[in-house]
Image (cartoon, rainbow, N blue to C red; front, side, top):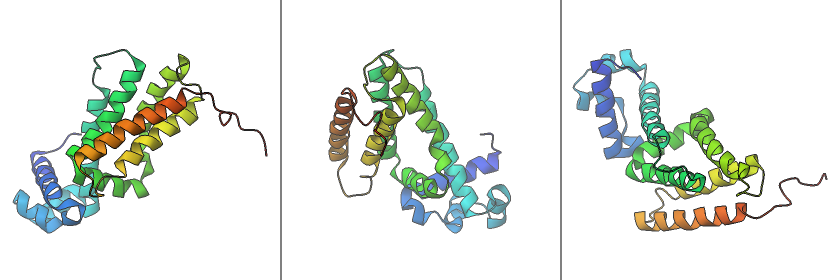
Length: 191
């Protein structure tokens, strides 16, 4: 994402405002104050508050996907899948306000999740192809996706980081254990 110096400064200030006050605290007034600009400048670069929020989410997703796509330290497909799961949970724990804003926008823009879903699918594909997972690709991908997103649903629930991480570890292991077993649901009988 190429930005001008002013856009960059507004985005930096907006990220700080977001982390301090969460999505509800992300107001154009607060961002303008933090960036030292007048509201017409913000509107010129981002259109409105929604445009600013969308730019923040795009920037955060680019950072997140950059981490997930970085050259892995292993070729082991199970470790790659686990790493992707852990990176997702870690990013949400590190940036809870950004994750909350992303989750808000996901309701009306589900395509925001497409790059992460496709990367998850590619990693699951390797495990299906090697016979590690005994169910079809689409079902296995949905289970991994749903499991990880189930952990993310715990964000903001009052659980400690340690509790969320422990739940994440147990859920990953449970999903993988189930995927290693054949399923009659892979090819359901017609009704």
